[in-house]
Figure (cartoon, one colour):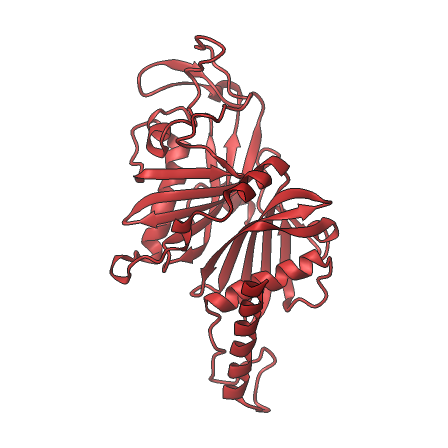
Length: 352
């Protein structure tokens, strides 16, 4: 509560100072700017304050007092809705896990955190676009998996590396950060085991609260099967959550992800080396389940029917390598769109 109050206070003071600088002026435009004068930028504390305002309104199930533009757009799990619908009707409380990603350059801010919906734990990925101190875009993914949300909260807090600033001399350009993050998506789609996989040796990944690398205690999902299976305890066609980030990619056993599309990189925090991507992982199933691994084996693996993951994936990048990865995923119909792209963009595998 104290941190939220401070963010509100800082955001409010920033707005007050802006008003004092601009002063009363009949020439001021309807959007709050004086002709020839740009509004003060919304920096990290200001952007995070908008997230807190949004969450407070969401918990109250009342969007009427949110500072939004007249053309504000809102989606939940890829579906365009009226603001005030969907989770706005069912949110019952906030959780304890909170991770903010701020991009003052683009006026975008994102949030990964736990919530309570109808009393049950869930995970929320949120993106807001701020224009002239108003919210113009709201994109949400709600992962309704109580066990995943509970696992996140058991961590206590986000991995500290997400909050660490990159030394100024080592900060990558926005374009280079996006390029490195996109190599992850390209590596999954091609997954021939021969690509360039830019992982640090201590890279780890968390998906819906579960650590899916370097975690020998985690079992594989039931939809991964193998014609080469040696025993009920061993599946030679499945990549293992006990492996490192690099070993999983080098195995070629992610090949059943047939397409990684609609790759949108909208929130980039250069100070902390963070990139948030929104995308879809398609599983075409059928004959695509059978493929050759880099070591020459023919295996059959992956989902048996077509479906798609809708994903918000966060990358921590250090010196051109992926250090930490965290994702919020939700199962959705095969080939579904984001609500933010044309059909052609939605089917494209190019980064944007």
